[in-house]
Image (tube, rainbow, N blue to C red; front, side):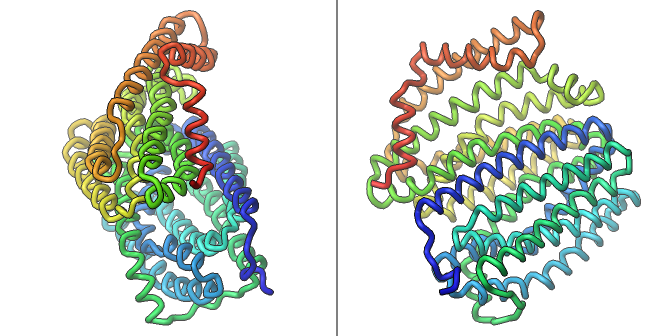
Length: 486
C-alpha cells in the first residue's frame, strides 16, 4: 500500500505538531536576531529599503495563492487519495497567476517611480514571492497528510541558509541586492525540499493540469480564506508601503524595529491557541460550559504573558534600542512603546478570533478583519503624512483595539463567560505588571538593563502569586482544556 494511504498513529501526529511548533519558534528567534544584525550593519536608510522591498511584494502574494493552500490541506485531509489531482490543478492555476502577479509587481514599482536600487530589490523579492507561493502549496499537501515534521525541517533550513549567506553579505559589505539574494537562495532550498518530500514521502509525481470542475469547487470553498488572506496582507504590510511612499526610507527603517519586535512575539499566542483550538472546536459541539472555561483561561493566561512583557519593554525601550540597535535608531523608541500597548490587545485577540472560528463564525471573523483593515488604511492615510512613523504606530494600536472589540461583541452570543473573572484577573495582572515596571525603572540607575529582565520577571510572578492572579489550579485547568477531548 502506498504511503499516502496509510494512517498515522495519534502519537506520531502529536510529535509532528510539536516539531512544527518548535521549528516556528526557532525560525522566529533566528529571524529576529538576523534582522537585528541587518539593522546594525546597514543603518536606518538601507534597512528601510530592505524592509520596504519585502513588504511591497508581500501585499501581492495572496493574488497567487487566493486562499487555496488552506483549502488544499482541508480537502486532502478528507480524501488523501486525491492528493495528486488537487495539487496538480492548483499548481497549473498558480503558474499563470504567479507570472501575472510578478509582472504586476514590476509594473507597480516602476509606476511609483522608485530609484533603481529599490526596483532591483523588489524584482528579487518578487522572485522570492513566486518561490514561496509554490512551496506553500506543496507543504499544504503534506499538512493534509499530517506530515508536519518535514515542513519543520524546511522552515528551519530556509532560515539557517538565509542567516548564513546573509551574514556573509553583511560582514563583507556586499550590498543590499546580495542580502535579498540570500533570502532567495533559502526560498529556493525550501521549494526544492518541498517538491522532493512530496515525491519521496507521498510517492507521487506532480504534473500540472487543468480540470475546470475541480478548480471551481476549490474556488468556492476558498473564497473566505482568500478574503481573510487579502485583509491580513494589507493589515501587516500597508503601513510600511505607505511610510515609504509618503515619508521615505528612513521612516521605514525607524518603524521596522518596533514592528519586528512586536511580530516576533506573536509566536507565543499562536502556539498556545494552536494547541487549544481543537479542544474549543470539540467543546462547541459537546459542552458549552467547558468552551466558556477554555476561553476564560486562554484570555487569562495570555494576559499573564502579554501585560508584563509590554510594560517591561516600555520601561526598557530606550536601553534596548540604544544598546542593541545603536543611537541611529533613537527615533524607534516612541513607536516601540506605542506598539507595546497594542501587544496586549494583539495577544488577547487570538482567543477571540479562534473562538469565532471554532464555533462556525469564520465569516463573522473575516468581516471583523475587513472592518479593521479599513480602519487601519484610513488611519494610516490620515496620520502618516502628519506624524510619520509615530502615526503608523498609533494607527496600528487603534486598529488592533477595534478588532478586539468587534470580536468581543460576538463572544457572549456564543458562550456565557464570566466578565468578572476576566476583569478581576486583569486588574491583578496589571497591578503586578506596574509594580514590576516600577521596580525595574528604579533599578535602571544601578544595574545593566539585561540583568533586570530576570529580576523583573521574578518580581512580577511573586507579586502576581501574592495577589492571587495565578495559582496551581490555573495551570491544571489550562492543561486539561488542551489535552481533554471530553
